[in-house]
Image 1 (cartoon, one colour):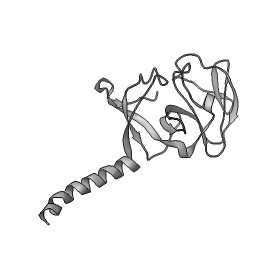
Image 2: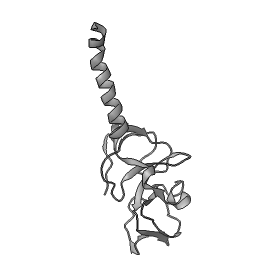
Image 3: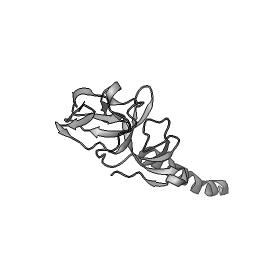
Image 4: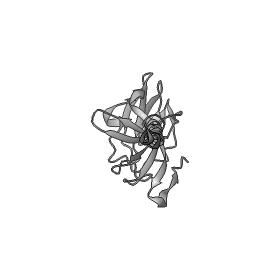
Length: 160
């Protein structure tokens, strides 16, 4: 009985940690250079699983083949296209301050009610909605806007 009393607090702590990691926030590692210049790769970020996703948030989306860390550009019901290297959402040109490298033109895409258009900042190497198509809401695990490591980058990723 004494052992149960000693172990009980640790079991509660373990359960709380597992619940927090499963439903609220968990660390995630950035692999590759598809988000360069914002992220260089190998950063450890916090993935927030709760809350509203806003345009230009960095999100984590799970595809059958891999986990993608990209930026949200367009929401359900919106139309997105790239003409002459400029991005248009609902026929309005946006200030694409995150693009690193030229964005190749792509045809107009109108998103369905549960679809999002994501792109990496490093347009020359990013595997994103331009190649794999829109992603469904259920594949988006949450937003990642806080860098834990390296400590030189510790803090919120700025959305200018």
